[in-house]
Length: 357
Length: 111
Ligand SMILES: [Zn+2]
Image (cartoon, rainbow over all chains, first blue to last red; front, side):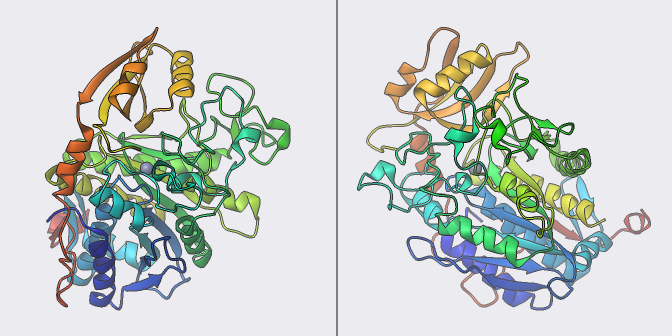
């Protein structure tokens, strides 16, 4: 076993769909990458699509965070094999019974999209190991260092950061394609096929109630918001209110904090804590459940976008949204990555279990 | 990001939030992972930077420790751990998952 190349991620997904036709459906994402690569996801569950609420899990948005794809491919394989074989799952010191596995597949649509950014992963695995973005050269002006957009800054949430944030807020995003921090947001929200595929997936599964984006690193399980501190007191302090433009993103201040109803924070915290508890049971690793905002505010990220959808459009269902930051480096030796896969997959199985009950 | 020279992995520690904010604004290093807070209130993060940039980071209230003098070489070594070809090409080859698939013990069933 080793890290999967991009052909293997795709064929892993396809082979699971072929091997488990009654519990698994191959989903063809509509958009191809700049280099022409197709993307696929799996819907895992025993019910017809749309009968159950959905958990959407995505990975591989940031090219250099290789192990995210292996975490999701192996999670899908674990659930499908255990379901068909009538077994439980054991991840080190954390175990799940066969009834729990059946409960997940019978009660949820588990939608797994392991490789959002195939061009970037290919470039990181074959050329520059530290590459983060996709490989779209449209805004590069012919400069190699200005190729690519940070997929996790390209979602439509506070995209106009120069208006939204305080001038002194160190927002981790850039409008410069050659930004050395590799956080170029792209020319407009959803300019990139990779982000449009994720949006399509959430639209395609309107019963999505939970969303997890798998990243590395720092050993955290993060929940909304990422643009400022959370507060549950003043609903007018929210990302849509222009009265607070220019005030967002500072940590120790009374200017602004982003509104989230207390019930949503509490529910998110429980899910994040359950994830971390099951993960810790595997071999004792401590991940921290906490809101995403720290000193460094973000915008255009998948988790804030996913949660904000129901606020922007009340027709859409509410999605509690999370970001896993696994491990302590982007590409640990595979022998260590295998252990991290077990850690995080135990957390994700528990997450599904908690979500579904 | 240039490949002409080695990229270092450094741990940057700033004595407080204002110092860190100013550093990030001025230097825009390629940050890996999130910012951690130490017990003494200092803040630290990993960055991936050229040797020139690593020399430009230290200042009043900021210390820089090199964790890996050639993160690019480390990354290239990992590239050798990426699969060749397609291990799932054979018709019967399917990912197995890494968890143990175990029959329920009586205790587990009752739990
Ligand atoms: Zn990431």
